Length: 275
Ligand code: FES
Image (cartoon, rainbow, N blue to C red; front, side, top):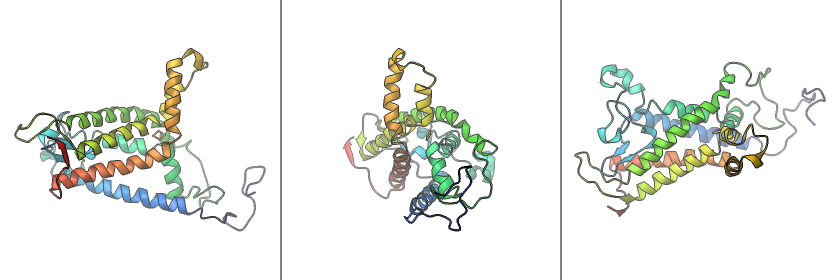
């Protein structure tokens, strides 16, 4: 109704003929993404309250902790990012500087998030059948948006980081202590929160459109590749819930970080079941 046969917009004065609350989803998305980015930015640069040595809980925002300022017990992959020698600049470099840029780019180039922030922040367009304020549109065929096509490579990085997060969740069952005391198996509410977060991160990563393409793409006959077909079916199921997983994992990441921050800051104690 609002476009001509040649693809141009019909000559109507109104910005849209829609009468529903089309502005509501982009408004909610803008608010949610802004709040999450503000919280994550604060936490990443806070550089404290990221590790509970008694239970080996490490927040995903600081994993892997590779700064020379990291608590030794939290650094299982080495401390090679100089801190002391960098002066004030060190405060601007996250302790997990080797993983966070890739995670950010993985989410930033995600097909779903692209749709969300194109609509919420660039209003390009703000909703279906609502005119956008921009005069020109070159899509993702030119710089800088052509970089979005690198998503597949950030997916590979996300797999590696998910493996590290899984290692952290396993390691958090080892009772700790800065002096090396402790040992043995532990289980507390923090472990459950860490595992829920990791499992959902895997679900989000596996539901990626690139993952689905990598597993099931370029096949002429599924019947000749039963294993890939079976995996593709499972990944396709998750892919159908990709938007939901994108939002849920933002929530679980923030919740996991907040819980560990509260424990590390001494605001409350961990609910313990074993150890
Ligand atoms: Fe969303 Fe790949 S499409 S993570």
